[in-house]
Length: 78
Image 1 (cartoon, helix red, strand yellow):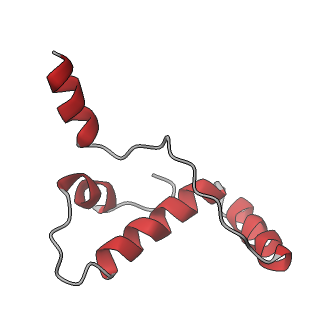
Image 2 (tube, rainbow, N blue to C red):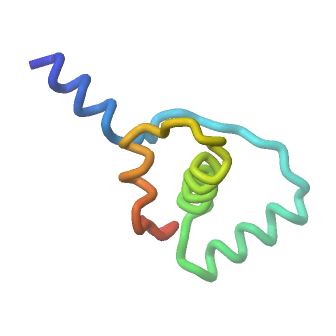
């Protein structure tokens, strides 16, 4: 049973890791304003940008199924 849980958790994106960046305060303010206007959280937008970056820059690397499923037809809101 524990093995099945591990397999299941490996097949979905984990949202438990923290990623800190340094950003110019003016860019941060504008980013937050635009996110709010689109009714999106900054985290939703950053997760979508990271998915797009990983897929677009994989250089022929085989990508995990969980990444492709997460990116399939997703908008930042999802």
